[in-house]
Amino acid sequence: MFKFVASALALAALAGSALAETHTITFDNRCGFGTPTLIQNGQVLSTGGAYTTNGPITAAIAYLQTGDCGFNGDNCLLVETTLVNPTSPGAGSSTDLSLIAPHAFSVTSGFGYYNGCDGAGANCDNANCPTAFRQPDDTQVQVQCESNDVNLAITFC
Image 1 (cartoon, rainbow, N blue to C red):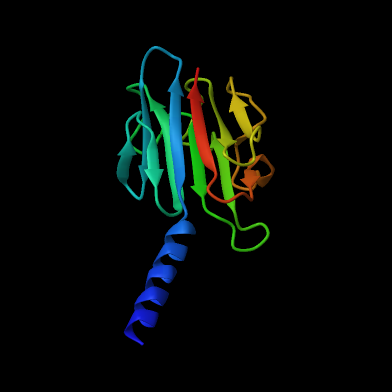
Image 2 (cartoon, rainbow, N blue to C red):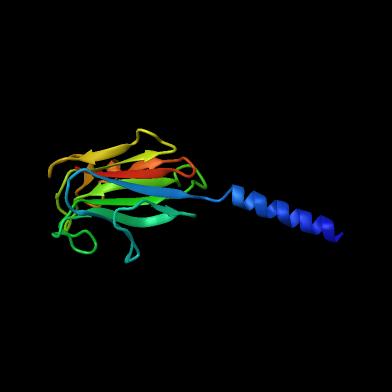
């Protein structure tokens, strides 16, 4: 009986690890200045290096710190993201660019999903770009992804 229980527990542990959710956010800073910054819940997660999480990442923000940005990206173009494996249709990852005040255009910024939803993303290269939130109800600019374990590449300049 003990061997059966131990075997069942071992199989359950292996099955659980095989189903573990993981996401990576990478940066490509082509500007020659500034520090890519990734923040979640008031905590700096990355200042340019790839960030990997073994689970979802929700309500994270990223921007290129040029010296003019506030801690929450004030005065700069913001990338907002949630990367999560979908549990039902429409409940997956979502990423957008934001120019809602106090955010403002600072440098060309863009993002794209990879390891799922490849090619889906958005870019903003001027203060009038149509791919960024300007008002809280500009939800049409959100880029959704319904793939498990999707990753995100953020590019500046």
